[in-house]
Image (cartoon, rainbow, N blue to C red; front, side):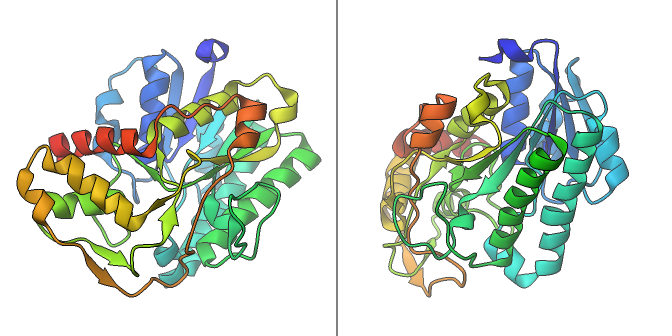
Length: 327
C-alpha cells in the first residue's frame, strides 16, 4: 500500500498528538519522509521523542492559526494528513471561541497553504459529531442532522471548506469522520481526556470510574490501527471516485459504556485481580452528548478498500497492555 509514497513527503499536522504520532510512527517505519507540525497545546513531546533522530523526520514547532507556519510546513510536501484540532465537545462548550479559531481558521489556513504549495492530496480528520441530532442508525455519510455542540459545527465547516477548495481550486481532499478512536498514546490526563484511557487510569489505581447516565449509551469505538489504515488508504488510493468524499472511520459495531467498563475490568484483572472488584459509579448525562453512535463503513470498504483489522475487544486488549506498561 505504501509503495505509492516512496520518494514522497507527508506532512502530519498535530503530529505530536495521539492519532498524529501513530501515523508518523507507521510512515517512518516504512521509510517515508515525514514532517510534523505541532504547537504542543495538546500534543506531547514524549509522543514524538522516539522519532527526533530519524533521518526521514522533520519537526516544525508551529501553530495552524499562523498562516506563515502553515506555508512553511507545506513547502515541498506531497500529501497532508491534517490531524491538528482542538477536540472535545465539553471543551468547545466551555470555550467556543478558541475551538473555532483552531478548528475553522486554522483549518482554512492549512487548506490555503496546501493549495499554494500544490499539494497532491489533503486528507483531514473529520468527526462523527457531524451527525448531530440525526437519530437513525447506522450513520451513513450523506445523511446528517443539526450539530449539537460548537465542536461539531467546526468539524462540519471543515467538510464544507474542503469541498469548496476542491471545486474552486482543484485541491483533492478526503475527510475522515472518526468514531471514538482509542489506543496507545491516548492521554488519560486532563479535564477533557477520552473515556477509555481515563477509565483505565482510574481502574489501575483501584478508583471508580464515573459513567455519565445509566451506561446504556453506546459508541462505535475504533482502535487506532484501523484509523491509521484508513488514513494511508486515503492518501495512496488511485481510485478517482474515492477522492473529494467524506468517510466514516469505525469498526461498525456498537458497545455500551457498561459493556466497555466490563471489558476493561476483565482485561486489566489479568494484570491485577483486585481491579475486578472496583465498583462503577454513575452520574448525570453530559450536555451535548448523543445517546448512540454506530457507523456504516460500507462506503469506505467499497471506495477505499478499507478493512478494519481490530475489533473493539482486540483493540481494548492491545490498548490495556500498552497502558499497563506505560501508566
